[in-house]
Length: 308
Ligand SMILES: NC(=O)c1ccc[n+]([C@@H]2O[C@H](COP(=O)([O-])OP(=O)(O)OC[C@H]3O[C@@H](n4cnc5c(N)ncnc54)[C@H](OP(=O)(O)O)[C@@H]3O)[C@@H](O)[C@H]2O)c1
Image: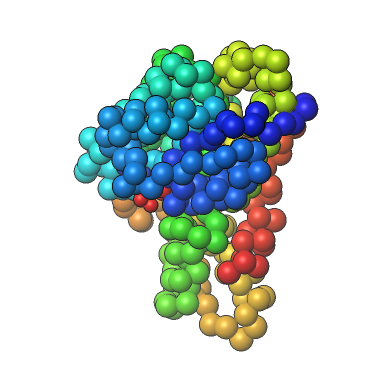
């Protein structure tokens, strides 16, 4: 599909620019058009008034929303806050986008599924979140669809990168501090590099802009919009991810001391929020519509470790 930047004078409103995905989007979306990336103090996603005010002031052509409540375990004890940010704010962004004809890019999660399927999840598979976080993210998807805005939702999984709070950085720290680290080996999925997700997002937006020449963006998104699964290619477990990370890090730091990584079951590592056993996602739709294949998680892991 043809690619294009935004028409001149048009803006992109980016939420959550301090987050893992948001900080990468700051880099990849810059070349497409003028970016406006308010801080939490400038636009608080828990306040509908603050969100409306910002959208109305910026009048963007696109709203890109990686901003979210992502504390999966904490969400079990503060569901109101999780829903305010993950569902209510998304509803308001959708309503405002619909009013001005802006396109919305939103991010969701593998945690909308219960994880009981025996194969990778497709976009059309039945959802059934088993945590407050997953339910709040699913509610966000539903609110966005109901708003009538032209929108694309990328459901991703196990996001990590060189910056932010993520599994990779935690494991590397623990592997240096401890003799052994126990890691869950019966949850299956694929790590997704935040930068790969951000690059894919820019590519999809550029293709939508290419298709929107001479057409309304909302009409183009009526055709190309909807939910897309966008997770790293390949599959592993949290244990497999940790083992590979430590193996590669050992190669990098010859003589370095790292903990043994021991596999355990989910039952041996109780957490407030339940996690799906199967988080694997079928990303064929993304490839069919936009020709984009997400990076193999082992390749992206090597690149991320090279940056540390
Ligand atoms: N991380 C994962 O493993 C994972 C997996 C699947 C899907 N996802 C989805 O992918 C998207 C991006 O995740 P991420 O890992 O980049 O998240 P993240 O690193 O936790 O970043 C979240 C962002 O949201 C902002 N935010 C939170 N509450 C806010 C509020 N009340 N007002 C304004 N901003 C607020 C944070 O700002 P502050 O810096 O001010 O806190 C931060 O910039 C999210 O939609 C998430 O649900 C993530």
